[in-house]
Length: 367
Image (cartoon, rainbow, N blue to C red; front, side):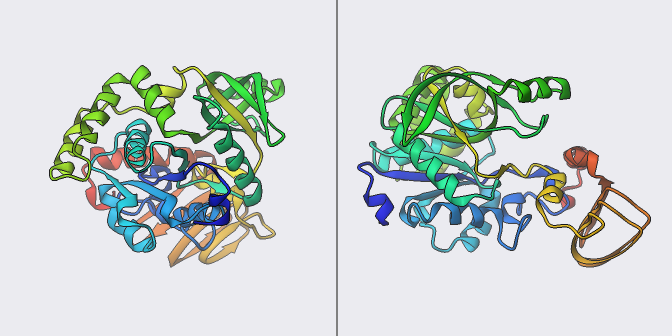
């Protein structure tokens, strides 16, 4: 156990959600190798970057990864130091509430006094020390009451691609940081509404990161998601016993496909937030990659072999093919051995619609 872990008087587990498909990053992101297992930003995969941010606070004994069965083998190869029992494999993708519920159930079996930090595997954070400090503060708050804690990112532009948290009254201070009531959750706004939210100063981007004690989140689930809680308690009886895999699949087939925001955070009391400023981006599209990566004098971001004439503002990701550009602007071009994507950067959010179209056409070979 690291020095930072021993300084705490309670156990902490860092749970990384690594089961998403990353459909906006097609054609590189596929079912068996989605966004979090790719080097979308920098030389490491996004999952590896997530773990590197945690290791200064913890050790491998306190890191848990939750993924879907189709990605489990790739994660085992990528993370050989992860304990076998700490790779939790969902038989079906059922959104974040079942994912978090499964992790809470199992961590509770290991130590009912534990706290958990729930972290997506596919976020970019540029200020690592600020992130670690904020996370430690939130974990300390988790011991002061039955709080469901999230991190609100101070908006810098009127972003329409994120959900928002509305800040309420101040609850307390911890390590000199204010802890605020979450007055309300707001869906992704249109441009006009996003501008108003930015100007108001009391709205924050919803980071999708959560911190709480394991006993608290299970108690809140029993209150607000009784069907999910009932399935988890049935699974508790067969944990580490013969028949676990079959029971888990059957339970997941019955569970509602619902996010933790809808299932718990928007319904529950004692939901609080810490304001966070650590260079966060959820890397939700190829446009986000363009904004985060370095560019040449023409505003182009090239990965791979690219030749360009009179072309500006383009993102090209082509590790296997040479791409040539002539007189084009503001395009996303991504190539793989079996597919090519070309779209305006302004339409990069719509890449998921291509994946939906491929699904309708039964093109499993491209998914």
